[in-house]
Length: 215
Image 1: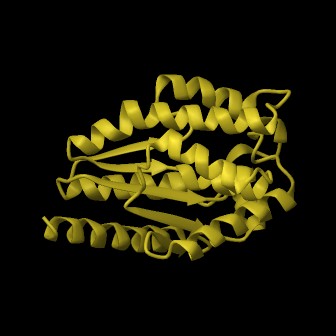
Image 2 (image 1 turned 60 degrees about the vertical axis):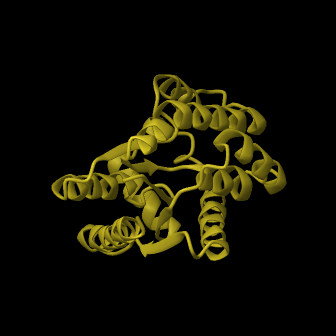
């Protein structure tokens, strides 16, 4: 069953845990599913991820944007498209909405430029559903600190950004969700993880059933 689901959210929103739980749920339903991520879903992407998250001095904003686009183009060609063509459900930790939120609303890069680049990098491949795990920035950063440790030298460049940057990114995600209500499902990620997983699983199960019934 060819279904493309993306998971978005600020730092510390719990995407990895939710994706793992949904992957397990789909496996138990005998539904082939692939878990992947951006950046880093391919060998090339892993090198790009290292540059984007850890390199100092940081790439300029345009270089950062183009690196994300290169990662996405390779990810689609090598992983996402082949999986979808084989009838596999693809669960991706981040996709193009992250670029709009982080580089557009966070960095202030032109949304028109991002839209043009998005069309080129994705060849118009859009998710069937996007689950946005939303929570207050401070809560997310506190979770990130628990995960990484208080020593910010171990944090990624994005986790170590200013509070103002993270607020802008969160707002960007919420704006995108408001503009695309047919695709987005916004989940309160401040809830206990079990509740977040149950809500996310319910959305995924509904989409899978709808897709199966339409064929």
